[in-house]
Length: 229
Image 1 (tube, helix red, strand yellow):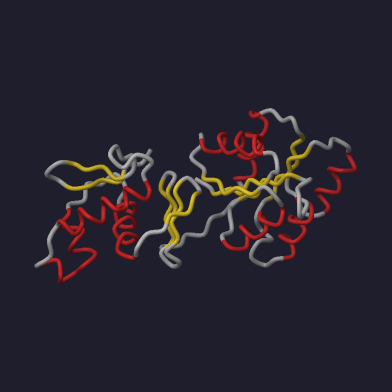
Image 2 (cartoon, rainbow, N blue to C red; image 1 turned 90 degrees about the vertical axis):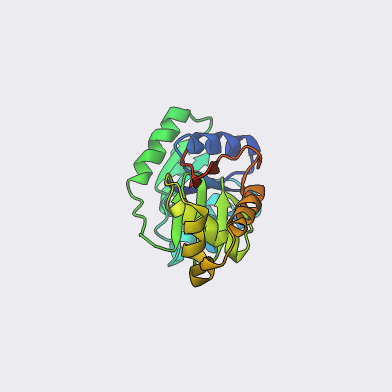
């Protein structure tokens, strides 16, 4: 699974591209103008950037040019979306550092094929502090959490519980094991109700319907399991 930036001032285009990427398990952060797109890239770099050429505040061409000048962003593949079909426009896009170019209106199968081709150039670096499971992304170094590309604020203890469950996705983890793992020696006298309360709070923050959770499921008399969709 990869993380994408989709930047376009046409909301419909963003929704269509996001839906296409989501069907393959990718996550998306969105921007409606070039300035916001560049700010997002600098605060939380992605694997691939999909940029509209003509955007308010800053064009996609300028965003791409600045990316290529940045040590942190220069290696992120860029795919341009544009309504311009002239060869000179495409040449200009490649001159500022684009990796591919798709004209509007585009065919979803073609866009999907172009994205898959770019993914071959993505070489994610393994980082034990970064975890991606399904639509969940977590960074233990910064305590950042994203669900479906949306930022979620967790307390430090909630973060630790979610990180441990997600890092053991598909495994049933008992409340007692969670206590031992996260609270160490204090677990001997700790109550499993502490775990239960943290799980309830996490569900309120990451679940669309906390009463019918999609991510953290309760296995009666056994514990909890983080479900991989």
